[in-house]
Length: 184
Image (tube, rainbow, N blue to C red; front, side, top):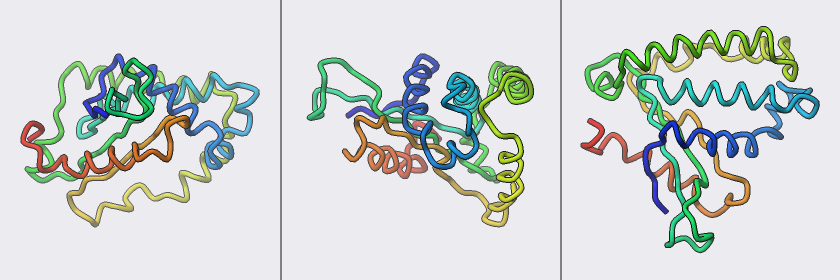
């Protein structure tokens, strides 16, 4: 199995994995009670969030790609999972991990408009009252007292490939990030 950085070209496959892995998750089912009626609404929101994460400073995304060494190899490389790791903190070491560019800043700005339009106008599948209740139950500064830290911000494995150690391999890869010189 090959683990490599996620690219924009990987987003459609990552979206398919996201949708299949989370669309019937208990939390998403509660937030999106009309998902069966309007499935594209959740997919659009998930794609905007994936695109935003990919261009956010401090977020590092990786995909797990099946290759010839895997027992479930189908004869062609296929993305079977992905993970986003985030480096938080304002210290000098944290700043080294927050690569940014003018293009990424501009894209995040445009994506924030797109997300607002999705949530305020297009979305019919979610329950805004439930989202508000969830947001109110999770303080935004819950981790601020920890200081600089890494965290796994998103992990998904395609349901057909779950329970094969793919998620564990992605987590282990992420745990090695602080030691990798290529990313320093």
